[in-house]
Each structure stands twice: as structure tokens, then as C-alpha cells.
Image 1: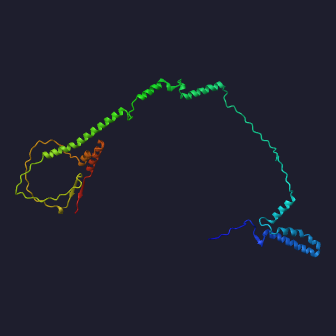
Image 2: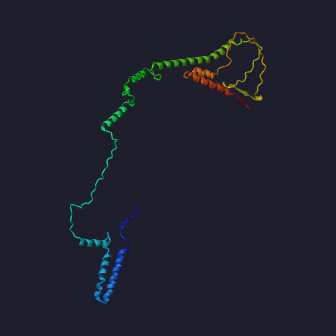
Image 3: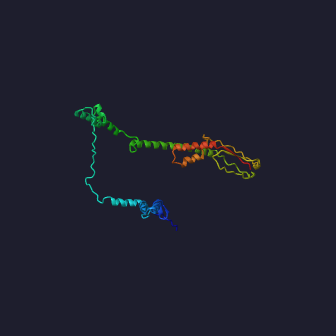
Length: 313
């Protein structure tokens, strides 16, 4: 554990020679010099040695290191003043009389009025009070506009008017019912319009189905062709394969069947996208505008995604 020394009595003077400080050392030199002079004078005449003796005694007392808390000359001055000053003190109860008189300055009162009498002032104040209470209508001669018949008529007319934005009013409920009915009717018409071409195509396929040709025992059996699955049925793609991968197809005898003439109804040549049919059948929570917007987006996507894939293997 470290030990630190705290300096003590930092205001004390530095010691020059033993217990004597620089000032006490000067006093000591003066006292020794006075004693030397007294010794020299005593060699000539003994009574002359008494002349420098008081100076040597005075400076010798000042050079004594008797008081540590204060210099020796301050201590001797306090001792001398204690013996010289009187020991009695007189107390005066009246204290010191003041000869200064403070006078307050005179305040000059200015007349800020315009010379109106009391009746004129009351008339003006009543006019202003009536103007404030009537919200300015007293200028036009109407003291109480809130109780006027015109104000009551306007209030009754405002109360009798039906608010179209109020959800509890019958007019608002009727408007909402009509909007919902029109929306449902339009949705059903769009669904029927989307499903109608599909039905016509199905009927056309059933009506145009040719009869089964008679099977002959001499007909050769063809090898199964290489079937390829198209992963993107909704995209118009064409795959170009090299000549090395092309497999020759054997000549097969063809049987000619006489087409049957039937009355076929006129159908639309445009085939509806299966994604649009799924959107109309399985998403009943969408509105008509949303279904139509999604169908337009699918048609644009189908037209823009025509690409050709070239196989280099």
C-alpha cells in the first residue's frame, strides 16, 4: 500500500539557518553587529557601550523563534497594543444618528380622458356591450338574431333535409341495395358471356366426331410416336430440333372416311384461355372490374410471350 506524506504548515516561512528564517536571520545579523559596536565602544570608554545596546536587544528579540503560528514582530505589536490601550469600552445605545432625509418624488397625474362626462361614457359602454352581445347585428337594428323567425325556419329546414351520407337513413340503404343488385347482375352477365363460347366448342366437337372406320386385319400396326409434354400450354411455342434427332415415320395406309353432312351451328373461332375460365369459376370474391382487368392482363401476357426455343443437342 502506497504511503503519501501530506505537507504540514504550508504557510510557514522557509528556514534558512537552523530555526531562523530569512527575516529572522537578518534581524540576528543586525543584533550581532550592534553588540560588536558596543564592544568596540567599551574598549574606548565603558559608558559608551550602553548606546548601541537597546538596538541589539530589540533586533535580538525580533530574531527569536518563539511563535510558530505568526511572526515575532506581529506578536510583539499585539502585546504592546494590549498594554497601551484602555481596558474599558463604552457602549452607546442610541447608535449613530443619520443626517440624511429621503423625500419621495412627486408623481404628476396626467388626464388621459377626452373630456367626456359620466352619461356619455355610460352611453358608449352600453352601445359596445350591446354590439358584442348581438354579434354585430345591433348595427342593423336586430338585437337578438338567434330568436328571429328567419333563424327558426332555417333550423327546421336543415333538420328536415335527409343526409345522403348518413348510414342509418333509408335513402342511403336503398342506394346501397341498388348498387349491390346492379353489381351482381353485371357479374352474372360476365360469367355467362365467358362460359358461352366453351359450350359451343364442346357441341361442335361432339357433332363433328367422325364414325369409327371398319377395322381390317391386313392393316399394319404403327409404332408409338414419341410424345412430348408441353410445360407451358398457354404459350405459343415451337421447338426446332436438329436433323439428327428426326425419326422417320413409316408410311401407314390411310383410310378415307366419307364425311357426314350435318347441320352444324355457327360457333366462335376464338378459344377462351383456361386461366380466364378458372378465374371466373373459382374466384367469386372478386368484382366484375377485377375479373375483366385480370383477363385483359392474361391476354396481353399471352400475346407478348411468343418465343421460339431452339435445341442444339
